[in-house]
Image (tube, rainbow, N blue to C red; front, top):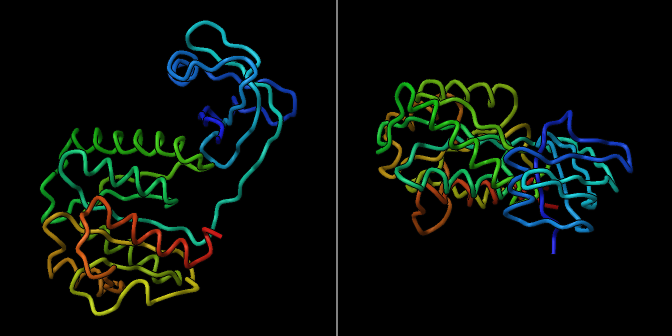
Length: 252
């Protein structure tokens, strides 16, 4: 069974073999009180930015502090191409589910998008709270999936802002794909290799409007469909990202 994975600040992650990494605060409370780690157990600790150590619990102090003696230290390089998912806002728990799945499959960043047909709408302080909730979800999913990198959750984007992102990626030699059930091209048939970064645009429950699709395509995006069935917005992005990540070698 894979060792449990915890996240700490970069300056708290020792790289010298035999050094001690301290897991404290809320993360330490989870390790000591919820997971009930004991001396001698193997754990993994990362900083969410590529550095990961493997070690053994050397001490459990109180209810919120665990000390880990470093056995190995690995510095992971950010993989290429980078895969970005523009995820339309969804209602209820579906939004967090989409972020969780996208993190687990390995996307590098997620952009919350206020689409025209999004049932959920973030305005003012609600946008800030929504982004922070997505970030917390991505952090927990990173630990569950043992990823060395926590995906970036960007600020809420409007449709013109998404179109601008699409244009930037395409201009830099990358690929932008809009998931649409009526598209003529199938994502699985596009194959690879992918040149440059890949951006995937996922619409809301009500679908992407013709105007939105036209704006993205005018910026260089290609509309594609996944398969014969219509997926929920909470799962479509993860499925599409899986196709891209496997075909570009990121899953090798």
